[in-house]
Image (cartoon, rainbow, N blue to C red; front, side, top):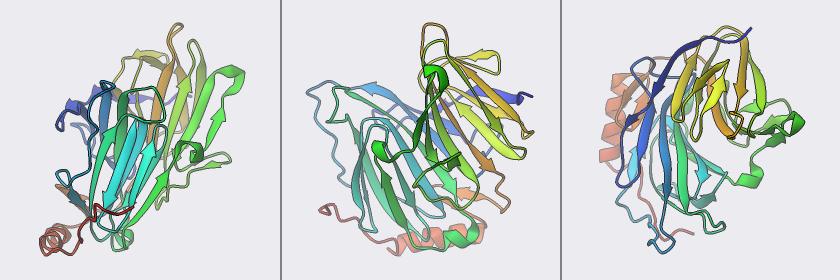
Length: 293
């Protein structure tokens, strides 16, 4: 049985500087998909070959608490610094995960990938809500380069599937998880199809970052966000006859604790939100060392 689509929407613009940002989650219908409480799509931007590189200089530094951020770099180079002393660059096809825990300040920039001739930057950023006990843990950071992302080829030369978070079959991401969750990236060559079975109770969304696709027999445009029912069933994905498709599937089991979100903090109570702000203003999240290697 095919899963039913509850609604389909386009994200709303929430640009940051020159970056074209579409905010997909939260939206007017749902505040979360499993533990995922936020999703921004940094749409593809083609940069001039001689364009000056953007540096992480403190102008974009901001705090987080109570969540993990997960950035999937579809194209480009993501440069990350944080107040726990982490510094890393992640390139096209890779991902980076940062657990804010009790509080952290981070700063990042996007540039074209110097290892390719592709002058495009393109990324997805998720906020993953942490269980209350994990909100009280120390910050962590895990970079995952493209060659470390689990991937399998689909049958009949249909394309491939990557596991960005969670697991599928024998594939398991290096990115830590605390609740049952997943992010899959399915690439279908032109005129191909693939189906996934989803267990009962899983909250599930699909996002089309680049091209049109047919999902459970209905065609949807680029940029579409689809939210499904929680019955057990299949997701049947097809690309158009003349165009490949990229499909992001993500979700997980329902987050049962209260969710109180304000600014960059996601906690379980308003009192905890107050503590998060007070600790930040008191300097308890530390400072970023931009000379870190």
